[in-house]
Amino acid sequence: MEGPKKNTSRRRFFLLVWGSFLAGVLLSVASSIRFLFPNILYEPESKMEAEKPGKYLLNGIVSYSNSGVYVLRDEKGIYAMSGICTHQGCLISWNDVKKEFFCPCHGSSFSIEGKVRMPPAKFDLTHYGVKLNRKGKVVVNLKRLVEPHFRLVI
Ligand code: FES
Figure: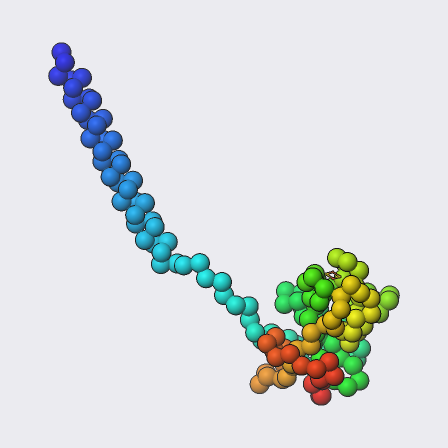
């Protein structure tokens, strides 16, 4: 009468041992696979391909919110500025009524050329280099900082 009971407990024991062994093997394989894909932060693109120059109208402002960049055109040419406030890094937006960039975080404002109009921001907006690529499109180089008077003359 005790034979089948012993078999059942022995079977459970082996299932437990094999289950633990398989769980260990699966965890080991999973961590090995995870090791093949390390946590890497890829740098953001250093260049942003924008539109053909005809897209930028005189005194027009085009926002590229994904890149935090504005491309503008005045009578001197096309230029690009950062859309990130120099105070603490909030995204600015264009206020068409006041004709200025406005930061919603602490109220700084900037002229259309990026000069500080209203603190607390102390520094003007960053200007980026722009040029045309082979396709005839404006390319903003986010790694090339230029003087505020820099223009792509078309
Ligand atoms: S982050 Fe723009 S004013 Fe503070």
